[in-house]
Structures are given as C-alpha cells and as structure tokens.
Image 1 (cartoon, rainbow, N blue to C red):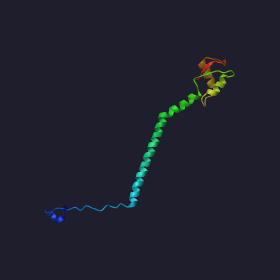
Image 2 (cartoon, rainbow, N blue to C red):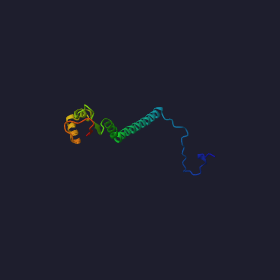
Image 3 (cartoon, rainbow, N blue to C red):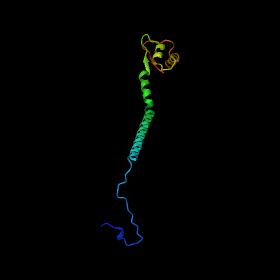
Image 4 (cartoon, helix red, strand yellow):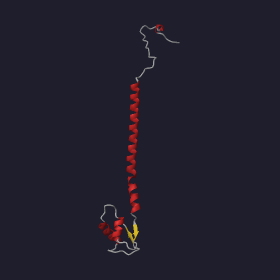
Length: 125
C-alpha cells in the first residue's frame, strides 16, 4: 500500500520525494574515471615491477658475480710443462690487476722463488 501526502494526519509532516529516475552521468565523466583507474593500475604495476627488480638485485647481486668469478679462477692450479709464474699470473689474475703484483703474491703465498717445476700445485690468491 502506497502512502500519499494527503493521507498524512500531521500538518507539519514533510514528504520527501526521492528521485526515481536514474541519474545520467555524462560519457566524458565516465571515460575520465575509467582512464584514471587505468592509470592508477598501471602505476601500481610498474611500482611492483620496479620494487621486485630492486629487491632481486640486492638479494641476488652477490651470487651472480661470485659464481662467474669462481668458474674462471680456481683455488689451485697444477703447473704444466712450459708454464711460468708470469703465464699463470696473466691467465688467472683478476681484471685490472697488474701481473707483476700477482706474480709477487703467488711467490709469497706458495713460498717459491722465481721458477716452479712442472707438476707443482700452486694456491692462487
């Protein structure tokens, strides 16, 4: 049963009329809202990707370099016939290290003088 304003007994009663029609929002406004939502989602996605890259770089940064260096520079080397301390130093010295300093470190670490015999096992610095 519907209530009409005439059926109300109190004279000071107020009848509110609520809109029954759907409010039409201009298409431009709807498009702008969708665009802003899309931009927010893209920014959020890019932020997550950036933080993931930074986190993985900080966590896994040390493992990649040490594994590559470990593959090229063993802890020991056996002197082959015809090899000298100089040839070992030029082959196993890290990039940017002077071979003369590396030869000095090889001699001090292995307690050898200028020459080494084939078959000698040398510890690398």
